[in-house]
Each structure stands twice: as C-alpha cells, then as structure tokens.
Image (cartoon, rainbow, N blue to C red; front, top):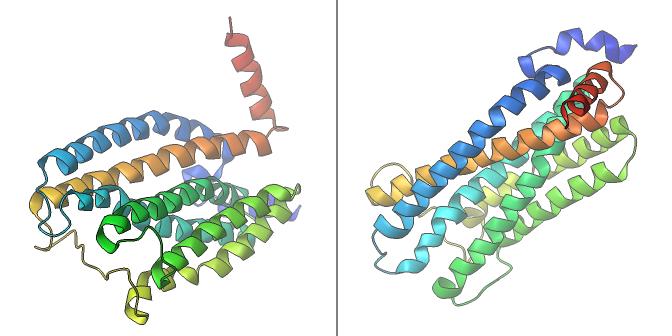
Length: 256
C-alpha cells in the first residue's frame, strides 16, 4: 500500500511509468545507435587521418580519441548511477532503480576501456604498461565498484532489497570520483595532469573536433545501450503486469 501511495507523487517525468518508458525508449534506441555510428565514423576519420602527428608522442597520442571520452563518461555514469540508485532507495521509485541497474554495465565497460587504452598509451610514452599510481589505481577501484554493484544487485533475488543494497554501495563509492579527478594534484603520480583541454587553444582544431565527435558518439552509445538494457529489466520486473502480458500476447500473435 505504501508503494502505491507514493507512485502518483513520483510521476516527475514521462519516463516514470514503466509501460510508457518502454515504448518511448524503444523509439529512441534506433536513433541513438545511428547517431553513435555516424559520429564515431566521423570522429575516427578526423582523428586518425586528418589530425596532425604530435611533436613528442607521434601517432601514439591518437588513442586519446577513445581514452578521454571513455574516462570522462565512466566517471559521469557512476555519479548518475548513484543518483538514480539513491532516488529509488529514498522514494521507493522502481524505475529509478532500474535506470541505475541499466547504467552499471556500460560504466564498467567504459572503465575497462579507459584502463586498456591507458595502458596502450602508457607503454610508448611512459615505457610501461601499468603502474600502481594514484589515478590508475583509483580508476581500477572504480571498475571494482561497478563490478561489485552489478554482482550485489544480481545476487539478491528480492528486487527491493537488491535495489537498496546496490544504492548503499553506489553511494559509498561516489567518494572515489573526486579522488580520481584530483589524484594528479594531490599526489606525485606518473599520470600527467590535465594536459588536454577541449576548449581554448591547447589542442589543434582537428584534434579538438575529433574529440568532440567521439565524445558525442560515446554519449549516444551510452543512451542506446542503457535504454535497451532498461527495457529488458522492465520486462523482467513487470512480467506479471497486464501490459506486459498483453505485449507478449501481441508479439506472439504477429509471429509467422
């Protein structure tokens, strides 16, 4: 009864109702994938073929067009995931908890890409694939936090208990985000500071263009994958509702 009483007050957006979210997200996913592929193709073309060779790092620097967008989004996704998890915990909003669960695997993948491309970049520039310096270690902890959140929420069968336990872990892990960002200022670390600025004059124009194209491509990818995963979670958790049963019946009826 408590959950039913809270539902009207939680209709803060069109996506708050699972049935409505399912339909709208389904219409958005193809557009997000199209934007992702087009932006990625344009960004990689500019970054790999048009951008000039760096004077000190030569062509090895081109990995930044993958590394930097993945790094920035992996941190941002964790903050957004923690926000939705906390919102679902505090207000008993099921859709918010579903958003958090849907974002976690994408954040984990982007964190892994960050570490992987960082190693590819580090070998020719630092002379080593891996060091346990402040930023790299804190990013590895971020990956563990993502994996821990996914494992915890999947290990608990009760949906509400799973969401609450995941929210607690996600909120505790938020403290790692400022540590990642400020690690190169707080400690003497092998990882360089903020040498890449996407505005101003620190980057050549084609480099900056490629960076922005890849950034938007990663954004589109995140929305496409998170919406797709959210729809699957909605169907799983709403399996006993009338609209899902009607949807299943309609889908079955259209099969040849």
